[in-house]
Length: 70
Image (cartoon, rainbow, N blue to C red; front, top):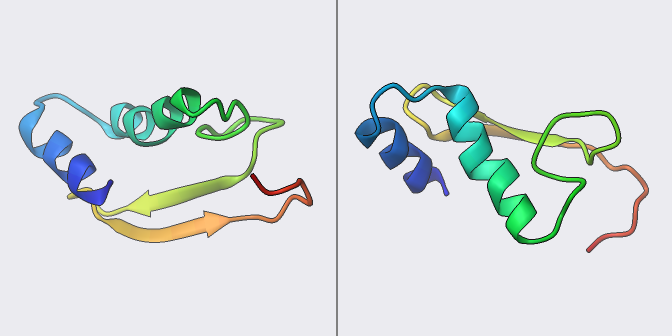
């Protein structure tokens, strides 16, 4: 996914962090039927990745919710 994000930022002019977040998290989660993942909002599973300016993963943050694992 890191390479895909990096290439997207490099080859698609005018993109920003919102576009990349949607493409790398929200869209894949929806395709997999994971309605409580892939976005930051009340009632969703907390977790996100921090990316560098060039699209590489710098850190990943996840929080245990007590919900059953998939």
